[in-house]
Image (cartoon, rainbow, N blue to C red; front, top):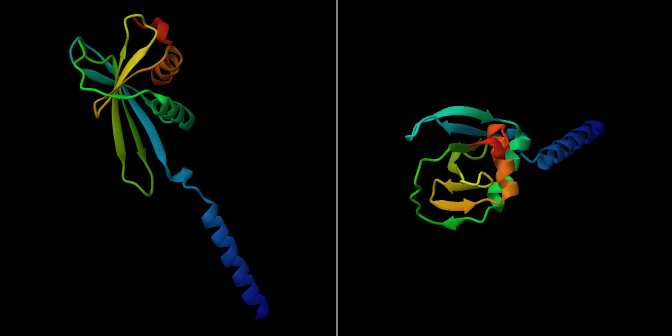
Amino acid sequence: MKFRMLLFFSFVVLLSLTTGCTNGIGDEKQNIVVQKRVSDGNEYENFKIITENDKVEKIKKILKKADWEDAKLNMDRPADYQFIFQFKDSKIEAKAVGYEIWINPNIDKVEIVEASNKYALLNEENSAVLFEVLTGEKLSRVE
């Protein structure tokens, strides 16, 4: 009887430790849907879907470090690309946040607008990384 109690107690402790040490990362599904402008108008087509966690995390880090300003903008042309960052985990329903990016005339930086009217001009390094992860191309080759 003592052996069964000890075995049961050990099982409960082991189960508690296992449950308490999980961080839920495996439950979270993240992706970025990238769309490219296909005409002079406001028409976009799906270009790429990014599902690799390391790439999604790179984009999240850049967006978090960006110097965001509250602004209502009226850009002179539609965005060159737009992307939707999506995540879904077991605790939160699916959430999507949309962004639009413009390549500046010098082709060395990108301007980004979050759907909630926040604006940021990324520095050259972050612009290059963001653009390459989103498109698979170097920023300087885009015209």
